[in-house]
Length: 152
Image (cartoon, rainbow, N blue to C red; front, side, top):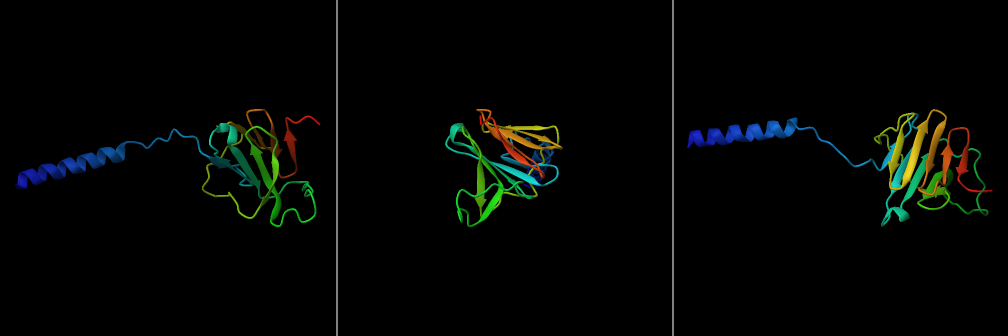
C-alpha cells in the first residue's frame, strides 16, 4: 500500500510540475488599452456583432478645445472627457459619470497598432488615431482632437 501511495504522490508532483512549466498563451486580442503616457484609455464595447460594437476612449486631460454641449445643461455629468466611436458612424462626445481608466490595462506602445472588433487604433508620440471599418474616426492628444473621415 505504501509503494502504491508513493507512486501516486510522484505522479501528482510530476503532473503539477509539467502543468506549471507550460506557458500560458492568450490568443485573444485585449479588449482595451492605454497609451504610454497614461492619458488615454480605450475599451471595446461588444455588441451582438461587429456592426454593433463601439469603441470608448477617454482622455484624462479632456478634449481640447472642449466642444459645446448641444443645449444648456445637456450633460449633468462629465462632458468632453472622451469619445465613443460606433462601428459604422461618426464619434460622439462622451457625457459620463463613470470611467474605463484602469492602470492595469495593457499599453499600446508608440508606433504600435491595435485591431479589434472592427476598429483600428495607432499610438504615436503625437497622439492616438482610431478608426472604424468605414474609415471614420478621431485623433486625440493633450493639445487637440478632431474627427476623421467625415466630409465637411
